[in-house]
Image (cartoon, rainbow, N blue to C red; front, side, top):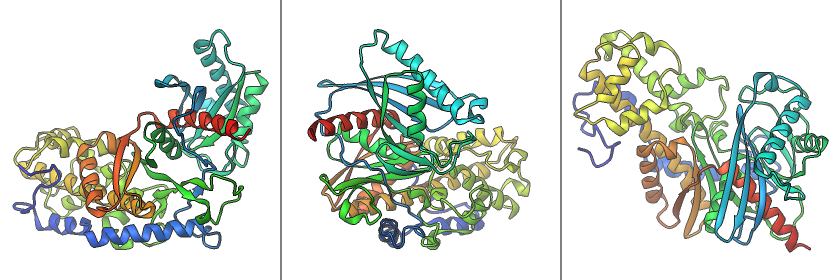
Amino acid sequence: MASHQLDVYQNEKGLPKEALAIFETLEVSEEQQRDIMRILNESMNKGLCPETHDEAAVKMLPSYVRSLPNGTEKGTYMSLDMGGSNFRVLLAELTDKGLKVQVDRYHLPEEILSGTADMFFGYIADNIELFMKNHCPDGTFDELPLGFTFSFPSDQHSLNSADLNLWTKGFAVKGVVGKDVVRLLQDALDKKNIKVRTVAIINDTVAALIAGAYYNNNCHIGLIIGTGINAAYMEQLSNVGTWKGDHNEPRQVVINIEMGGFGDDGVIEFVRTEIDYDLDSRTVNKGNQLVEKMISGKYLGEVARIILVKLTRLGVAFGGKLPKGLEEDWIFATSFISEIVGGDTEDKQPNSRRILQSLGADDPSPADCRLLHAICARVTQRSAMLAASLVGGLLYRLKKPLTGIAVEGSMYKGFPAFRERMTEKIAELSPDYKAEFTLVEDGPGKGSAVLAAVVARMDLDNQ
């Protein structure tokens, strides 16, 4: 058996030449990886420069977070994590023994998602009040600081002020776009006399960095690789030409890279293929988030399906007749790829067979199962190589002997073959600047609560 789950079919024996031709286009050489590392840093510099920021594909958004946790933070804080049709409220207690968290999840009904701003933030305030009755029944706290993780495109003006640019993820709440969401939330809390004060707003990637830094003071990068891909890191203010805040100590700020947009300006066309152009044409955001579409869990299953469909039309899969289930766009989940790569081998492909049968192939041939396994391995390999290039580029930017990376997301947590190949390639690309990965559970929730504690600590330091 191969030494690694992705090191399969290296002799390419028995695979049709049409498949090998496609696989060749998916290969990413070390030279191309190093080009991506260099070009990523050039793109990041464009995003930080006021003269080129507007046209930059990588937006490099200042988060207004100036300090990471240093281990002295203590007390009780709340957080609100909103990134989808469910939101979560957390109560976090920071003590000498660590972080203790209580969390409840709440669903946003359709009438709230399509209602007014007053309905939306009023509903959130009602549930925060319910949470406090359940978890703080004696009203112990005079006023609880709250960190707000808000994972929607926004223009941030300060640590506790951000205007919503547009709703995504099916949200259609009226009267919020262009408004300060922190103000709207605080007004709703104040209207109900809820003793909570919103002290900070961040996105999920910045929250992952803060949560990671709480557990490891050598953590300088937050990385999310799941349905999307993004990263955040601490940058010196002298390099942030777009900075509009003060230049007091500490002269640094966490940057939300918005890494998924890397390549939207055409700089990575040398690694994009016919398959990528086909995939892009099937998405609602054509021409955007191009590197994300080559790496993240939202898209990899469809990449594999497109290849399988193409090979069927060329007559080398399923006898030239596509199973009905595979005719549907997006039907092939990335979780299928993880199952196939993790459980099948060159000799036996039980997962490939089972999944093909579930998609309408009554009796897939051994050759078809073997072909699907090879496709999934190659798609995973390319995703891991590209992700490694992006992380390697960040390590070279920071130039630290050892950089802690707080990482969250299904591609890292639930896809071992991807994780192992990505970390292996990072070590090869960046031998001088090493990475130490820490899986952060519930980064968006814990991170904003810890940030509220950092704000309290800095307020005390400045008194």
